[in-house]
Amino acid sequence: MPPFVYRITKYDPADRDEHGHYIGAEESTSDHGPVESAYLQAVAAFAAAAGIDRLAVREPQITGIPHFGLEPALEGHGLDGLFPPDLSGFHDGAEIPLSTALELVRAMLRDHGVWCRLEVEDRFAVHVGWDQYVYVRSDEPCESALARTRALGLFPERLEASPYEPDLDEPGVQRPADEDFWARLHWSVVTGEAAILEEGYVDNGSRWHRLTERTLDAVRAGLTPRAMLTVWPDLSADVEAVLAALPDEGLVELVWEDGDGVITSTIADETEYAALAAQVAGARAAAALPLDVDSRHPLFTAVLPDGDGVLRARWRTEQTPGDRRWAFLKTLRRGQIVTGTVEEIAHFGVTFVDIGGFSAMINIPELSWRHINHPSDVVTVGQEISAEILDVDMMRERVPLSLKALHPDPMQQFTERIGHVVTGVVTKLAPIGAFVRIEDRTDGFEGLVRNAELSEEAVADPEDVVQVGDPLVVKILDVDPTRRRITLSHRQALAHGR
Image (tube, rainbow, N blue to C red; front, side, top):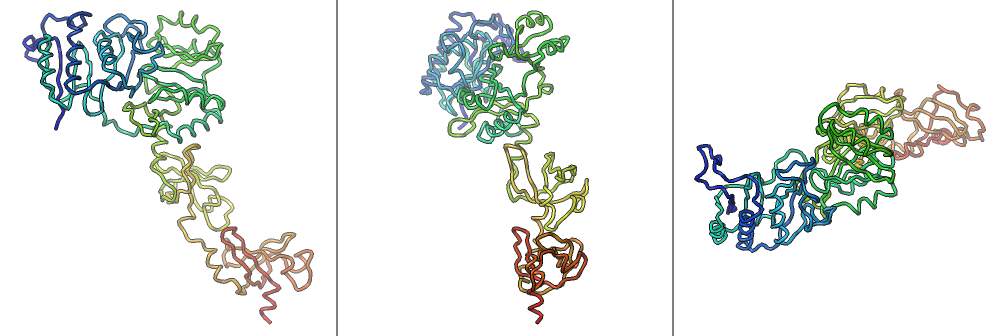
């Protein structure tokens, strides 16, 4: 059954023009009196009819810019007496009694800049919109509440849906702050890539934390439930240069760390730069962050899941390149076959392969079962190849590949030839013996004939028996494909011939 949704207003429908716009005399702000009280009583009536005495705060937000609301800004965003000054308890998913919920409705009607949805899963919701429009959704028809609302002098109207329902169809996947996230963050801190964590405890409200290996666990333990997390590189120690580079016009967010290590941020425009400079005097470090999402460059983001690991917060962080890499890596698995293009052969021999915008890598031993001198013996830049994923390292964001895994190991065939006598060519001499190529190809497999197996008599130096390039009859004693070793004997081959 579809939910029952009602729009509750103080505006008489008879006072609307042909376009549905209100043209009556009612003010769009709260009267802080009997009309405001009527709204609260109406919401209470709907809650009572639906059997609701507790609601959850969803997607709470405060204005990030002073004097944004229709009424003057208040200390504590109009929530004094409801929540502590740091707004602990006012977070996504926090359950509050109906009495507190009604006071939140009052604060939203007065539009001091605080807002949230009030909901009970799929059973009930209260949304306060612009210009004193209140929307109530219930899985019950609430006929008694409708009658009560009319008696209070308000006008309830049935709708198909509240315009303030959350948008759950946003593209992409929200990254959770799970163990993979914390492992990645720890690695980034250790390597010096990351140093600052922004905790979005409400929408438009942030706390800032300096991260070190020593402080990371404590910071994690103190975060607000379902907080939005943004990871940043370190602030600049050249505070004067940061201030000098502030834009000529427009809003900017300045973040600074004071002498006590406390990190603060504020939003200001060019008219406030002088006061801002005085405010940050003596700061250890600072950074100026543009408000335009496309111009901000955090490292990666996430949202805290609940204690059971389930991500129930509906809000999304703005995806960074790091988040997009994470989303791609989550689609990969060990043993998966991928196709990509060779984009680079590094000077240290690693081959990098573009597998859909992500640079995976193939180490030299994984290019071929056979010995090669350089990756260019097997692949070329621009070549399209298929390879098997050996691992997906979410912490280091590395995906090692294997080209050889898609082909059978040719050394395996020699395990069936153990005990056979073959003729090979001496390729190299070493203090311990002679290496002999036992395949008729330039990259053929080589085995070792130790000094004791070169002759029936003791040999101190293999050069006393053979030279590089000499043909040599050998018996295959052992083949170890795992260790890539073939053991040969010339002495036993001679005995076998007898």
